[in-house]
Image (cartoon, rainbow, N blue to C red; front, top):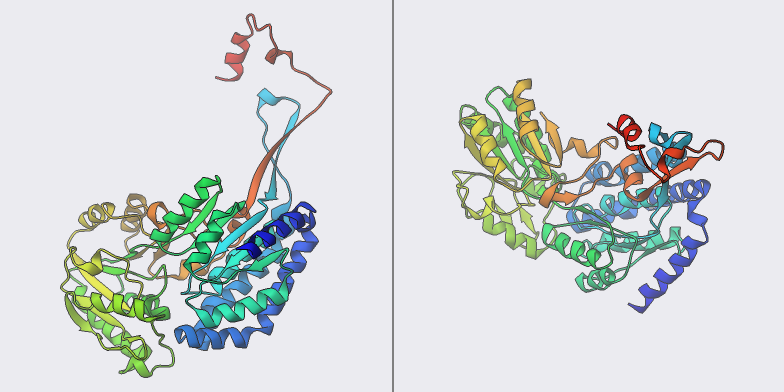
Length: 456
């Protein structure tokens, strides 16, 4: 890790020189990043095909296009975001003005996962650059083809003393976490998230943790069942289910459950054909470890749709399971794959009580027309974010903060929230020499009465 120590020293020197704090510099770097992504678009798409069997459309819309959107918004709004904000000043600070300055943390570490290896590395980087930081990037070694292209692209785009990229496995991440960074941004699972947070605590380093969990999807009796099924199938089987905000399981009202199952089956066929293995739009499992983990889940309940597997191709068909119990393995762990458990409920209040006992999920999806019921669920349950009558699409709105709560994550980003995440908010009170209020100075004597009137 000598090279990392050398890089960190150089980045601290570079940051201390003040280069990254200039708004024009930040804008220039964002434009350079976008330009080089465009230059490498085809290489990135080919790499995603090799790693995850992603289609060109999916690669562009869920990875590259989202990063372009983040860059465009940052470029358009950066000068406004970075401008000091004037806020109100109470009478107790008469003759003063108050401001909030956004300043970069310094040298930040961004650790990204394999499931969306481009988006989940570069979208946080956009925020880090916009806020004026230097950054060390650690992409996932599991999506090895994409890691290779990203490494070449980053090294071609930025000086290592400004933005650097480090390759390797878990041992490299462990060594990186021993170093003192000014901020750590991690996307991954809860288990590793705890390790990151514990390591950060050694240096009192602030963190953003984008984790996951079992994101429920409630389909009530008044839902548009067919359209609900269509949107659930799309959100669940995107990237072969390897999406942190994919619907993890469905809770369907017992009156519409059978219809919903039939419509889900129908839309799997419409989207991917009678043999999804031959579909150019259906992905593959990232590696054998995850393949065998997912294979174990199919042993639970009744396989209503799918269940076909092919180890050689790391293929698991879009699968729907029925007749499950809460004690089954698949209902205890995050699925993170193309297997959809469908449970039923009779009363929405009972379903809410049940979900309150579960860990707070990263996402929640509600399919129902009754606005009072919608608000009941939103007000009753804590979760990172979600959609009403859709799945996943809240993630692609850069004006919504994206992040978890509790065991599903700490902090949020996207759009201005990315800039804020990578910025320290420095409070400044500017006082005039013209007037000096004597009340605050000793001797206090009977000044308490005036204080009570002013601060009641």
